[in-house]
Structures are given as C-alpha cells and as structure tokens.
Length: 279
Image (cartoon, rainbow, N blue to C red; front, side):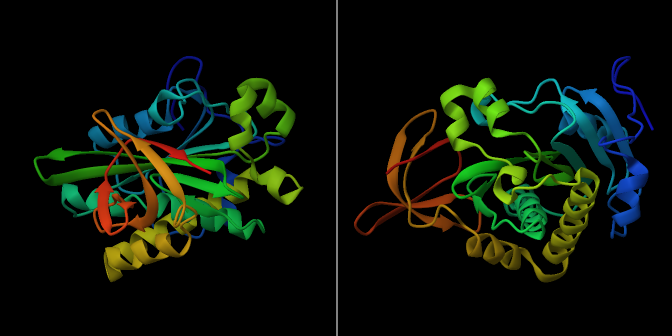
C-alpha cells in the first residue's frame, strides 16, 4: 500500500468500499494486479500510474482510487463521479510497440470495460474515440497515456472511469442537461454492482485483450471494436482545432482514426477532436 498525499490514505475495503483482498479473491490474471495500490483520493489514477512507470514500476501495476480530484470529461468537459460508487482504475503496460501502434493497443481498455458491463447483463457498446455506452449514453470513459523516446514506446498506461452505482437523481443534480447523455451500470441493470468483482472483471479482461494483441495482432482487437461500434452508420460532427467535419461514421481504421463519408464517395479519417452526434 502507498500514499499519494497526506489525504490519500489506502482504503480498508470495509462495507461497500473497494478492497485489495476482495479484488484479488476473484481476479484471474497472471501479471495484472500482482502489484496493486488503492487510494482514498488522487488527482488521477493515470497520473499516479505514469509516475510509477517513470520510477521503474513493473508491467501490470494497478492503481485504483475511491475518488479523483482532477477527473474531467473529454476536452475538459464536466465529469461527475462521487466517491465510493464508481470505478477509477489505471494499469501500466510495457509493450514492445511503435508509437503509431498505441491507438489500437489502447482499444483494449474500452473492450475490457464493455466486457465487464456485459457480464452484468447490459449490452455495452463502444464509441470512438474512447467511450463505453449503453443505449447510446456514456457509461464509461477510457484513457491512454504513453511515454518513450522517438518512435520507441517505453510504457503505456490504460485507464478507465466507469459509472457503476451513481443514481439518476445525483447525475441530474450535478450535470443538469448534460446528464441526458450519461448513464450508469446500475441504472441499466436495475441492481447495484459489486465494485470489487467488477474491478476484477475489468482487470482480467484487460490482461486478456492485451495478450490477444500481442499473440494474434492488432487486427483481432480492431475487429472486436468494430463488432461493438455504436457509432457505425451514425451522422456525426467532429470539431478539431482547425476544422469541422460532418459525415457518416464508417468505423475505425488501422491507425485508430474515425473514418467518415463526408459526401457521396468522399472518404476521410480524423484522428482526434470533439464528437457530436447528429439526429
């Protein structure tokens, strides 16, 4: 156990809190979770995992937190995650991949989260660039951060923030109109989620997807994404720093870009930006 700050003491796992022993009892991994840290509160589990990576932490190191002070939605949008009801987790990997391969490697995170949600009985899909959705509403966001020299990747941190047991009234009170685009696993299934088992399921499936990438190649991971793509066929608008693109989403390409048909027979890919769904 470690401490992130004087106020970020390891939690004890009592009652409905996350607990390392409870997670380990149902964890089915080889490397992921062998080293695991759990905090009451951090700025970001990805920040902590990245610092540990720089200090030489081994692959499979896991950082969990009951709450995050600096959690933000994509492009800095408001994000609501009260302590003690959701999942905030990041995992360190040291894959032997080039920088251009990171976007497809990172798809392991939303695939793992969608697997874990499906194990709860809810048909989760994925949405470019990094969301997990239920009935078109966001239930989780995933994150990737990597470091290296030039094209050589030293480490990759994959993270996730999953809305598990937060209720509709709390979402509405905190997010206002924006709550219409957000949901939780509990809301989708009608029952509370065992957060320790869910965390173990995410970690187990994440290791499996990373192993799949290494053993069978990125194409298998990309095909799995495409089979769950909740955006395919939708009319979307993507705003980047320099332009706005509107078109029909055709899927994700081998570099992790969103492929759009912007006019009949006109195909292009965008690699980042703010996504807006159109009617």
